Image (cartoon, rainbow, N blue to C red; front, side):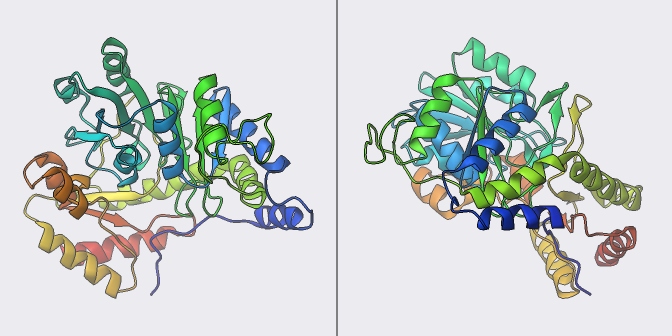
Amino acid sequence: MDIRLAQPDITEREIEAVVAVLRTPTLALGPKITEFEERFAEHCGVRHGVAICNGTAGLHLIVRSMGIGAGDEVITTPFSFVASANCFLYEGSTPVFVDIDAQTWNIDAAKIEAAVTDRTKAIIAVDVFGQTADYDRIADIARRRSLRLIEDSCEALGGRHKGRPAGSLGEAGVFGFYPNKQITTGEGGMVVTNDDEIARLCRSLSNQGRDHMGGWLDHPRLGYNYRISDINCALGIVQLDRLAEIVATRTRVAGWYAEELEGEARVTLQRIDPDVEMSWFCFVVRLSDEYEVKARDRILTALRAGGIGSSNYFSPIHLQKYMVERFGFKRGDFPVCEWLADRTLSLPFHKGLSREDVTTVCDALRRLL
């Protein structure tokens, strides 16, 4: 048996689009990048899209474009991929984690305001597993306390909050296009924003600090090589065109899992807020309280040994070795996050799964519980 945890959804259309670029002399800094940016911005309902090499780079660019740096504090969730905190550590800022909601698994908006200090510069909200955060409350806090609001939507392309597209809910949003995401460019990402200055700076910083109208060897600011190629963007254009189909397929697979696990008291699913149109990045379940981390890891290992891909999404950011050594975080600091992270299992999730595959995975999980 070999049921993969994740795999990209690639058709002949994507292959033909990539080959077409390879037949041209323009593999980088060409028209496919502009086309991808414009189409993506239109999808998100914003003025600007800036295509870059990955979501982490996009987060870093936004942080730098907002002037967030040494001495500043940034509020974010400890239950995420490390990039949502690393992006401002690069600039010397300090993480202020706020614990999560036990049901939605997103940052607990009711706890954010108590974490604001005179040094707080921004909030980075993360749309965990494809569910947008509580942006009504978070944006209200940001407005009242004069904070910048960044949306990490790397896992939520195609999702909506009260009808508004993921990525458009903060001052700037970021998407990632790794092969396990809703759409892929192999590696890649996109910054989206309505702010002209954020877009201008992100575009310049991602291209070695060049200005749009400047020469190739003219660098008015320190920048990075965070560019993406036309090859990647050609793939992304077709994937974006197929987004509705891809999201619908992933929603169907998520529905199969929900049906298979209905009534299983030892497993709990992420609660989807009624204001959210979910765009499933992966399918994660939480084991009941009787299962502590060793029991979860035993199940994870057994699933893998049986040919069923699985993982533990996420390990708490504040308990990563470098975070503990640098900031002194310890177990018990964010108990809801830790309680959840000890019990999560990410199950196989992609278009290639049949209903029979989902049944096989769930049957195997039940036998191990």
